Image 1 (tube, rainbow, N blue to C red):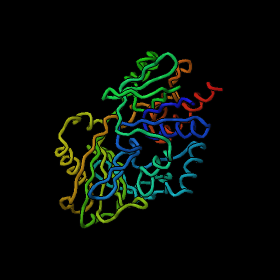
Image 2 (cartoon, rainbow, N blue to C red):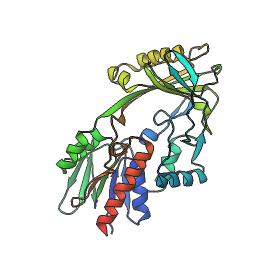
Image 3 (tube, rainbow, N blue to C red):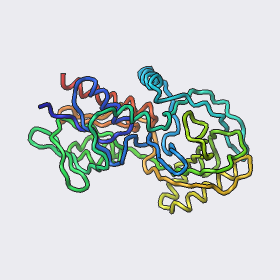
Image 4 (cartoon, rainbow, N blue to C red):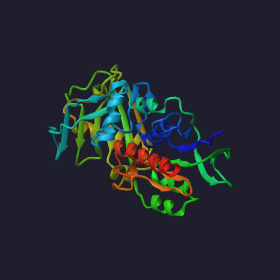
Length: 328
């Protein structure tokens, strides 16, 4: 019996690695602490329909990633989003000249990772806390003390601070991951019953607690019963208010939104807040992936490259490439 490869994390990096390994004929088993796949590419079901609280859209520049996106588009998992974009600067709203192509999952962001996962075996609601080596193989232990294994190799596809803990068996790699600073983001969703009387569908915000806002119904395939907006706070504001109660976060960001929008704002029919503790790396890196091939440990994630969705996907491909190369 072939011993499978363990992959910890089912965000875009982990699933990119899993797909590449699976395609090369190597069995994999995925683990994730959440109830479903996607990581920051997941969507949250709510009373206001499905909401993209993490990644709002993504762009594709690298030829390899463009090819993957085109395949997803052919299968109906992604579509181009063409919002009416604005900039908010020095107290003024102005149309944004930005014309880059933006992609979103359809009918929700999580459609992409759900499709990537296919029928690969996965254990959800399982927070792996330890990766340890037996005589021949690797084993994993979760927060409840349950052990999983054996595995021939382990691919760790989590944010850097979580990866650091799991890399106890490889101090050098743990040291690199420990040096990566990741920044938080508070996300808030507000839904309005009569739609807001503004043409705006997305906005890059400066000089505010807010960094970005998007009109959910402007994305292809979304539920439009309510006019739902997703607001992202800046990293600086999120850091300062990391432990603020959700109700207070909603109130403050709702206030910042009301200040900049060019129309009357009724009380929202629905509100929700979510804290992304590790939203993005503070700086880009050029590692591609981290690995100790002799040990059989590989690490990937957006923080190994650009901090973008594309970077996460490319990092997963690189981790898989190194692993396959070592096996040959």
